[in-house]
Length: 236
Image (cartoon, rainbow, N blue to C red; front, top):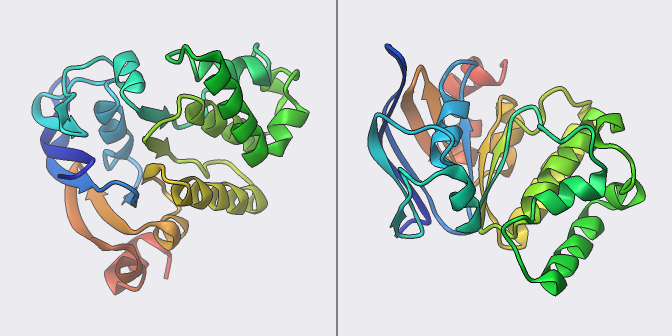
C-alpha cells in the first residue's frame, strides 16, 4: 500500500472545476514531483491533501487512513507537514517562536529539544538568527524557516509548494540540497515546483498536471529527457 494515495480527486471553486478526477500515489521514502504551468492545479492539489480544501469527489488516503474529510490541524498530528507557497512565516515573531509553533502538536519537551537541535544542525543560519524577527530575514532564510518549522512536527511526509519561488540561484541550489537531505534521512517528500528542471533532477517520480488533469507520469529522469517535457517546461 502506498503511503499517500489520491483517488479520483475533484475540486471545484464555485462553478469552476480546478481538479478533474486525478489519481496518483506516493510511496514511503520517495521524492515525488508535481509539475505544470501556473493555474494547472498544483497548489489546489496540495491544499486538498493537507485538509485546507474539501474535495467535491474522490479520496485522500494517508498511511491506510481515509483523511479526505479530516481538518488540516488534525492531519498535522498524523504525520503530514505542509510548507506553503510564499513561505507564510509569522513575520512579527522570532525565528525560535516560529519553529516552536511548528511543534504545537508535540508534548514531549525532551523530544522537542532534540528536534530543535536537528533543525539547527540542518539550518545553522536559523540558530544564528533565532532571536531575530522572521520578517527581517531574506527570502531564502524565510524559506529555510518555513521548512524548519514543518520539520519540527517530525513528519513522515512533507508537502512543499514552490520552495524555490522568488529565490536567488544560490539559495535555490541550497534549498534543493536540503530537500535531498531531508529525503535521505527518511522523510517522504511531495514537491510542487515550477522549476521543472530542478524538481525532476532530485525526484524519483513525477506527475505532469495540466488544467486539472494528470497528462503524463513516470520516472523523473526519463521525464527530464522527454522532448515534449523539455519543450513545454524546461525551455528547450
